[in-house]
Amino acid sequence: MTGILAVRQSVTLTPDPRRVIVKLFVPGEDAVVVRTRAGALIDRVAHLDDEETGRLLRDTFDRFGTRHRDLDGTFHHHYDLVRHRAARARDLSPTTRLLVGAYFSHEYAVEAAALCNPSMVAHPDQTGLSVGQLRVAVSLRQIGEGHLSSIGFATAVVGPGRRLAVVDRHGPLAVGRMVGVRHRRDLLAAGLAEEDCDNEVTATVLDALPDRYNEATFDRVLGNLPADLLSRSTGPGTLEQLRRANAASYATTFPADTALHQRVLWPANPAESNGMEDARFVRFTDESGPVYRATYTAYDGRRIATRALASSDLRRFEITPMRGPGARNKGVALFPRTVGGRHLALCRADGETLGLTCLDGENRWQTPVPLHAPRDSWELIQVGNCGSPIETDAGWLVLTHGVGPMRRYSIGALLLDLHRPERVVAQLPGALLSPDKTDRDGYVPNVVYSCGGLVHDGELWLPYGASDARVGFATVPVVALIAAMVESPPLDGRSCPIEE
Image 1 (cartoon, helix red, strand yellow):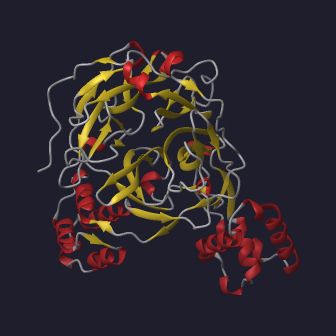
Image 2: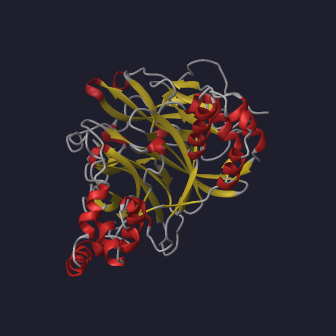
Image 3: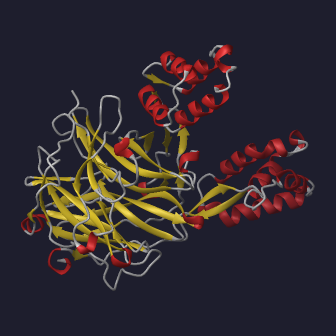
C-alpha cells in the first residue's frame, strides 16, 4: 500500500545541536547525593578581583551573546534565584552579580538527541503567498540530554501541488515567560476528585472560589481558611494537593519579535518536569472563531498526565489539565469542531484500543467508546491515532498507528461517520506508511509516527517522525485514499453520550 498511495517527499528536518537554550545550573544538584555547592561557588566568584571579573564576563558574552536572546537578563535572573546563598549579597558589584549568574547557567541543546512526532496546522499568517500555496505551522517533539522533551516549531509552505519548502530555523531560541492566567474552578474540582481528595478543606475552598479566578484570589481563599479546619490531621496534605492541582494550569507567552521556529514550550511545572511529549495540534473552529488547540503528554519521571493547550496566535499559550477516564493514558486528539453539540476526542485509555470520548458538563472526558482494536498483523500489539480527525465530504479521516512484530510502528487510516463519529465507516486494508530502509534506523528504530496532518488542495500532507531521527513528509491524494478503503463494521453498537 505504501508505494501506491503515500509519496515520500525529499525534504526532511533533522536534529540541530546548535538550537540551544540557557538553563539554570546549580552545582551539586545533579549528583546522586544532592548537596548544593552554591554558597561556596558564589564566595569564590566574589573573591575575584575587578579586572578578572570584568574579563571573564566580557569573554562569556563574546562566546555566547549571539547564541541567545537577552543573555544579560538571563544572568540577572539566575543570580536572583541563588543570591540568598551569597554571604554578603549587598556588597557584590553589578559585574560580579552578572558573573555569578553566568556560573549558574548552562546551555542545553533541545533537540540534540532526537526530533520527531510532528503535527501540522495552517499557520496564523497567510500573507505574501502565491496561488495554491498554504503556509503551515509544524509542531515538533524535541528531545535533548536526559531524554527531556519539549515542544518546538517549524514553518513551511506547501503547494501548489506537492511542492514543499521549509523555512530555515535560524536564530536564537526563546523559552516562554510565565504570565497570569484565569484558572477554572471546574478543572480544580475535577482534579481533586481524581485524587479522591474530598474533605471540608477542599469543599470550603471550592465554595469560596468563583468560576474563574486568578492567583491572588486563590491565595486569599487559602489564607482565609478557618484555623480549626487547618489544624486537622489532613489539613497540611490537603493544602499541598490544592496547590498542586491549581498549578496544573498556567500560561506562557513569547516576545512579539520571535519567529515561530524560535519559540520553545519548555516544562514549567513539576507534572511535566521530565518532558512535554507528542503535541497534537488542531485548528479548532466554533461560533467564536478559530483557535489553535493541542493535547500533549506531561511526564514527571514516574507518571504521565494529559494536558491541553490553547492559543489564538501561537504566541501566547494557556495550558490546562484534562480530566476524566477518557483523558487517561497517552494519545488524546481533539476534533476540529463540535459534532452535534459535543466536544469529542480520540483517545486510547486502555493502552491498546482506539476510542472516542466526549466532554461532559463538568469538563471531564467520559469513558470512551471503542472504535478500533488491534486486528491486523501490523497492529496486533496496539493501535492509536496519529492526530486529530480531518473532515472530508466522505467522513472524518483518522490516521492511525499500529505496532507489529519487533515493535515496528506503521501508519494506517480509518473513516468515521461525519455525523455519528462513533461509527467506523471504512478502513484502509493494510498500512499506509511503514518504515523502509531509508527511515528504519535512528534513536528509536523501526518507527514512523505522526501527530497530525492536514488536507490542502486535495492532498493529505502527512508529516511523520522517522525512527525519532528526523522528520519526513509524505503526500497522499485524499480521493485515492478513501477509494482504497473497505467497509468496516463497528466493534459494538454503543454510542457516545450526548451532553444535555
